[in-house]
Amino acid sequence: MIDLYIWKTDNGYKARQAAEESGLPYRVMPVNLGLKEQFGPEFLKISPGHKIPALVDPDGPGGPISLCESGAILKYLAEKAGNGLYPTDARRRLVVDQWLFFGSATYTTLAQQFGHWVVRLPESVPPAKAHYTAVLRDMLATLDRRLADHEYVAGDYSIADISMYPDTHLHGVNDVGLAEFPNVARWHDAIAARPAVVRAWGEF
Image 1 (cartoon, helix red, strand yellow):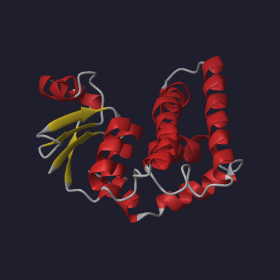
Image 2 (cartoon, rainbow, N blue to C red):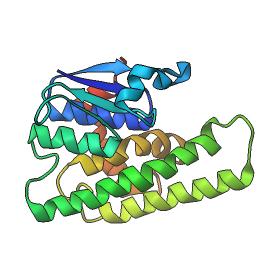
Image 3 (tube, one colour):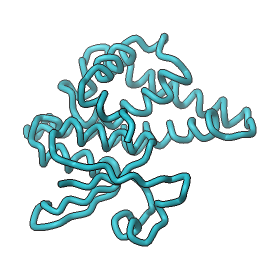
């Protein structure tokens, strides 16, 4: 049984979404960020940078393994499941990797800044709000161009899509809207309807 350490954040949801899509047995281990549980000594052994998500698999390659970083967790779950979320073909893997890294390193990172400066910060900082709103809209435009001639970002549904769906759902749909990004809206709605995604966004 895989232990998945998450909270109700974009990265937490993407890890749970990958776990649900993998079909592997797992259990949610909540890490309440509001209570600073990510700084507990036992959790720091799993995630030295005190970030969620994290994962512990007693049946890892060569024995028990712990992982942190959402991109690494998505790849691990998909490879272990072997159900197509991370393709075996080398050329297709490169495409998935490109968009997975964009989703993990660029898309989520900058969307989190949008969430901080535009959504959650009590005081208003107009230059920061304008900057990160423009950044988010630019990333959505990038995704929209890609999805104009691709059903999913790397062809078939994969962990690349999972890496970008939560921030699109949280900030694209709720905060800036997707009216100007019809291809993203189509992609978002198709993913939102997947049974595993519905489960992943349920309460825990």
